[in-house]
Image (tube, rainbow, N blue to C red; front, side, top):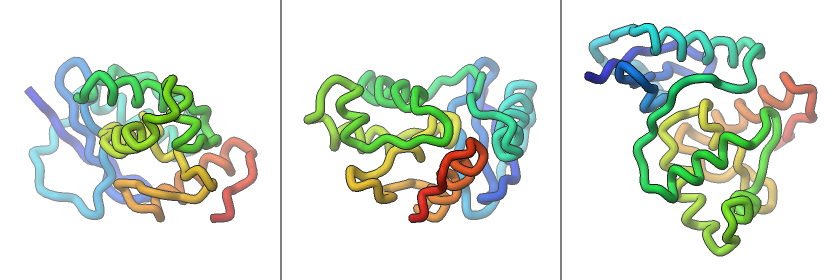
Length: 160
């Protein structure tokens, strides 16, 4: 059985989807859509950790995750979780970390298919020139997240 619930965030409503054992998706929305809101213990834990993130108190998430994707997508998403809070890498650095600089486009595509917003920090990947590119939640949200993490970690903001 799948359960869903919303969390209000500084960037808009966040829809959390889970089953009894793992979080399957966390996505930012422009507005709430009608759902049967079911808050399970796991969804409550996810909401708590997301709220701690937005309060500047959490930098790493500790939740059981079950994103659906190809083995390559899974590898990319796992690599994203190694990007430290408050830091960014480029798509080229991501491809190199995956072991193949030629997979840059495939890595970018997999990054864009990440369904675990913030928890798997795809927002920490920027263009080779350091500019903000491609973000399913909108570049304004990507900029907000990167600036927020930079301030919270004491790093310089991007100034983008």
